Amino acid sequence: MDSDTHTVDTDLPLAGVTVVSLEQAVAAPIASRHLADLGARVIKVERIGEGDFARNYDTAVHGLASHFVWLNRGKESICVDLKAAEGLAAVKALVAEADVFIQNSAPGAAERLGLGAEDLRADHPELIAVNMSGYGTSGPFVDRKAYDMLVQAETGLISITGTPETAAKTGIPTSDIAAGMYALTAIQAALFRRERTGTGATIDVAMFDATVEWLGHPMYMQMYQDVQVKRMGLSHASIAPYDGYPTRDGQILIGVQNDRGWRTLVTEVFERPDLADHPRFATNILRVRNRAEVDAVVGELTSGFSTGELDDRLAKAGIPAAQLGDMKDLIAHPQLEARDRWRDVQTEAGPIRAVLPPMTFRDVEMRMGAVPALGEQTDAVLAELGLSDEQVAALRSAGVVQ
Figure 1: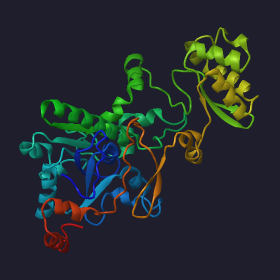
Figure 2: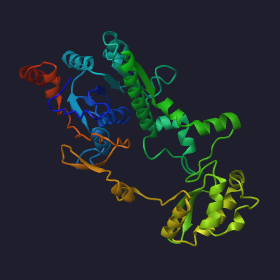
Figure 3: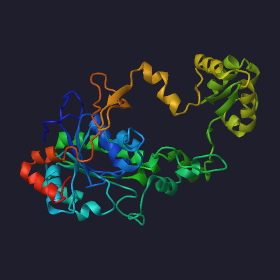
Figure 4: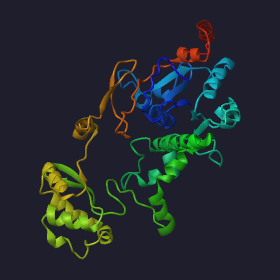
């Protein structure tokens, strides 16, 4: 399926792939946005009137929602009433011509509409159908609401995040993003397999499972040591020194991963070779056991430097360290500027800044297409399906499309 408005750079790795996504919020949209970045044509199916509810989270970006512009560039938006027979038929016709179908509707909703993987692949076994959910396709939690914070809580992620005094969810939707990234990986693997076998796939990705995968270290600590990993703030349960330490004018983060690093830190940076083989500090196991004393010693030594001076000394010595930046610092970060990572992306409210996707192909730049207005491509996509202008107008008058 080709659109006159959809230009294809054939050097992009997923050029020629068509994706239809019945999606909302974060998990499915981040997967499909990366597919679009990689060159796939992504047709986003949205509800009449409201569209993806992430469109209405805020009005931070020239009146548009920050989550939406982040997650939906490079897509085409069609507005269809799936409860109307004509609207549902149009979406099924789109899927019949697509390579990939993604949905993260409420449990059972896609199946009730006839958009379940089994129904869709009965006539199109080459289709890659991706079902994204909170807790999977079975089990006692199958019908539970699964917002990011709730999944972080159920998996125990919140139990290890925050300070010793206060548990906290992560500052970004970790469970949503984890699920989206595994969906992206699975889709690309399925496309590769289909090139060899001609057969599509039914793929299930649960936010719960994706988050559990990322909890391997604390889970194994509990299973095999009967230890609940403590909430450490900036610190690390298994490494010391690893924390934020005071300087004359602020703070710096230092993470020493091994005993060689400790020796370099105390001899080259702090000029305290007597600490290298200290009987309570010489190995990481000893430093973790005596963490409070290690942190006190390191904090006293860092306090004698300005942040900039110490940052330079640590970098020259090869000690992992960082200054604690905020979002203003990120936007102005010299690493982004020096590597030319900023681009303009078009929206209905004018151009906005965005950073290039993190997967960098040296022979072709990833596509960063426009963020679609609600239903912006409805007419064009319906025309591709063979509907006349009069038929589209009739559907619009009947409230079937927008």
